[in-house]
Length: 151
Image (cartoon, rainbow, N blue to C red; front, top):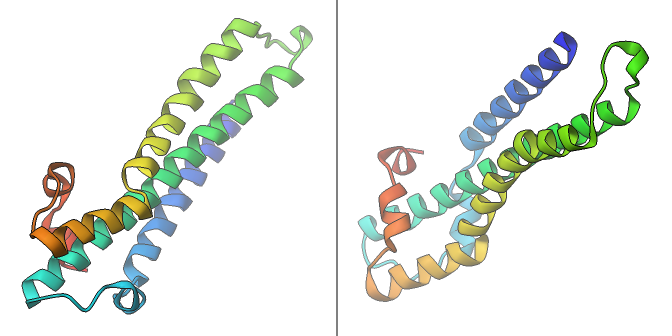
């Protein structure tokens, strides 16, 4: 069990490190080709870039949460399938289901929710609304922080 906890901790640490490295190496050049040349002012362009950055970070977080939930679910199922009562660990089917639902399902649900709320289509829709009416939806406006402008 200690080996499992150590491997999960190392995996999560590695994923978080990769997320930080990807976030630091992302520049505005790939997004510049996608953005429309409608930007009326530098402030408008900065906001569009910050919204794109925020959506990308939330999508990355969504993939990480989904991956962690899936990994936990698969590990619980594999341990339950390979265990026998002779090795000192026995599991019941209901305990396995609860473990998969709690330790795998909750993180995976959080990740899928993030991937849905911050999809590329929603990002494009939000940018189009901002270009057209200079308005951001409340769920974007409330999550947009200073760090999204400083990348």
